[in-house]
Amino acid sequence: TRLSKGTSIAMTAQFFVVGSFFVRSRNLFVAVGDIVEGYVEPGMNVVVDLGNIKIGTSVSSVEVIDVTYLGKAYKGLAFGFEDPEELGFWQMLDLSDQTLFVESA
Image (tube, rainbow, N blue to C red; front, side, top):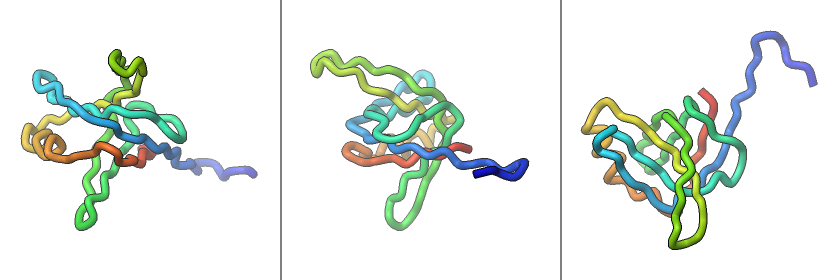
């Protein structure tokens, strides 16, 4: 299959969340889990469907999170926020056991 010049394919991934935490000093929300499909890199977009609204943000960084009590290393998707209210909104979300869909920007 040939693509015409300038055509881009949106790369997608799925990330299963087992938990989350916050780094208040850096205004970061971190979703902890596993990439179950595809590949995630900084700059990709995440949209969370809450039923009546959808919210989105972009991935600031992808980190390795060592959870020693489970003997397992998870990935952490870090999202940075300039606005403390937006960070607070993400803090209220319970994303555990949810699959996030991640797309290239």
